[in-house]
Image (cartoon, rainbow, N blue to C red):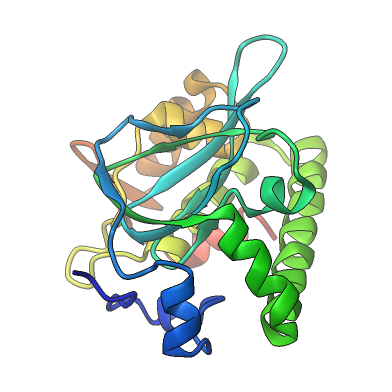
Length: 228
């Protein structure tokens, strides 16, 4: 049996942090649903939601494919994040796909239990509304960034996002998440080739350092200046 807690402070401040034991029990959050291997799909765009996913450990990417077949990563979810709740609320098909970036453990909450709690708990419903508002703000920002920012700005912002969301090793300054150059490009909204070239430029300029697949951030101030 696993409790709905991790060492990530964000998890204790998530949507479920103030629920009573009885309410948490009603959501069946006592057990990790399963472990998803790297690359394994949680759900596909166009499918119908039957459950809400809560990340216990690991990283999940939410992604879509454009008309040209190019993948676009719209969001990365880590410990404490919820996945698929908008489709449940709207009673519609998934608008994107989700898959594990690394080995990931998830809680799975039945859709009907989630909806029941929203109807019965106004504080919980308000938190869900705030979460929806934040998602909308982030989506609007992403649209503006895609239209107005240069490749350097987009890649720099993607690296800062990864640093902020997953942290860096305090001894080496390496990003705690290891993503492929393609995945970084998909997050930034640029081609894989552009991501590789820009990361190489940042390396030459000693803004970052590359050690195998890992990226070490050497000068976060210079990286932040790229997007100001």
